[in-house]
Image (cartoon, rainbow, N blue to C red):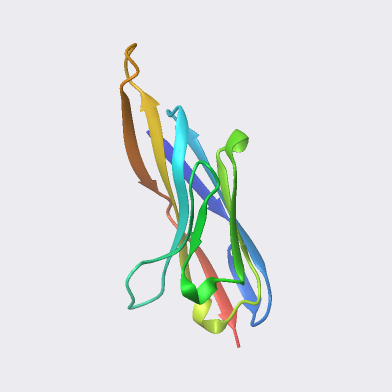
Length: 125
């Protein structure tokens, strides 16, 4: 089992910044993709940013140029630096990771997907 702990959410004024963190712990040998999603009230969950194990990144068009995703593999942690925040960025932000475990001596692997419980980001106008 893998446990994700998110932190860094809160209330900020429009134009302000926040940095989200998500730490993964538990049974895994490595982490593939790490990502941040968000879900606003009454809306579907949407991908905000994703980073591969090799460091490749992709962003939602709505956050390009304002948000930066990064990861520290030694700490099994993913970050989301959010700058120039807007009221429409208000949402619950959820961490996502895909873990990999080696399950036998032949090197067979199993991947699992996990979600954090979310951290609320509120941007006031």
